[in-house]
Length: 380
Image (cartoon, rainbow, N blue to C red; front, side, top):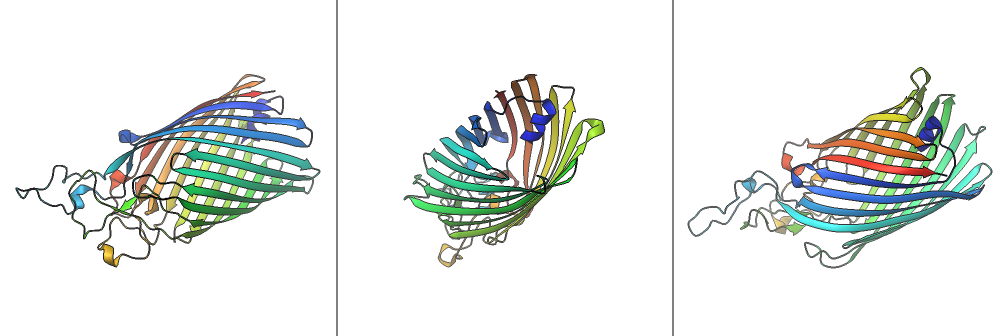
């Protein structure tokens, strides 16, 4: 994408610095995320480039706790034998959250003839989570650079900190991911990308803010039901296959890109993602890029909206709606403007909609959101 824009708009200079502000806002005052980030890329030597990014996130709003709607719960009656106020609500209970996250990364690319080595270090921290990541990617150009082989590995050292909700002591989580892929020039105007990736996560894999309702525990407060912490497996393995095709449409001064991604994991989730994007050059100074993306997944084998009895609970259980059978649609458009040879402005808008498909999970659990982004890049 960045290479296409650089070529299409004729950017001069290999070095760049940029700033981006993004706003993610779910409908009905659910979750709001305000993001600011800065990046740079410099080439101090012909065979060396350095890059880095700093990200600042503010997350606030109301998130589902994992409980089903109060209208489906069993409540203790008041002294007059009546259910408590709010017991007839058909919306899932939510809890308020507010957090600030700092994240950053530093990387380098060393080019040695046909080979490129790209080490990367990353770190992020919020009040209840810390993550440190290491990654190394290797690329080899073959066939007069018409073919590029890619190998990648990453490892994350994460620590889940106490939050005073359902999680009261530190826990560790580690994750490894490996990628094998190829970029193949099929013709002067056609590029194929194909990747296989494998991942393994171990340790504390629960969402520390998601609980589970057991029906043998009568409830007293519809807005804050008594929940037990979820219990996911302590290991998750996944495999991902990805393929994309980019075709230049010279008569229209445009290109079209389609991609498909398949994921299967040890939770028994199967996921399919299809995306189609169009990159339209408008005159000498703009590129308009509408896109549409569809995602579908099956449910995890330990997901349910509620469980009958805590004493006879299964080995693993979760009521996190994100593990249910669902689909999402994302439709949006990006606009890249070249104001000067050395200055670009980037604007984007995206509408995101998630919908449950199991016929059991309450529709109020699934979010719909608007995502807007504005950014600028300086080339020198």
